Length: 138
Image (cartoon, rainbow, N blue to C red; front, side, top):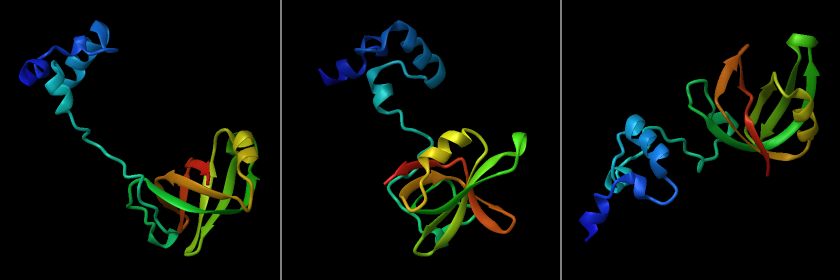
C-alpha cells in the first residue's frame, strides 16, 4: 500500500495541480510523492547559531548576530546617500549600512534597542560591515 502511495504522481497532491506539477517536473525532476520526499535542499542557511562580533570575518557566509544599535547617521546626498549604524555586542562593534529604504530604516532603527541582524559580513576600509542586513527587534 505504501509503495502505491509513493508512486502517485505529484499532481494529485492537494494544492499542487497540473501547472505547479509541470514546473516541479521540469525544474526539479519531481514526478511522484517519493521524488518529493527524497528532494533535499542543496543550500542551507543555519539560523540557529548566533555569532559574536569578534568571530566575524569576511570569509563567513551569512551570519546572525545579537546586539545593540549604539548610533546611526545618514551620510551623503542624493545618489550617495546611505544610512550607517554602529552595532555592538559585548565583544566588539561593526557597521551596518543601507543604501536603499533609508527613511524607513531610519524610523525602524532606534539607538539603544537590541536587534537580531542577519547578513553577509564584508571588510571595507579595514572594518567589518554588513550591508543591507535583515534586522529584527529582539
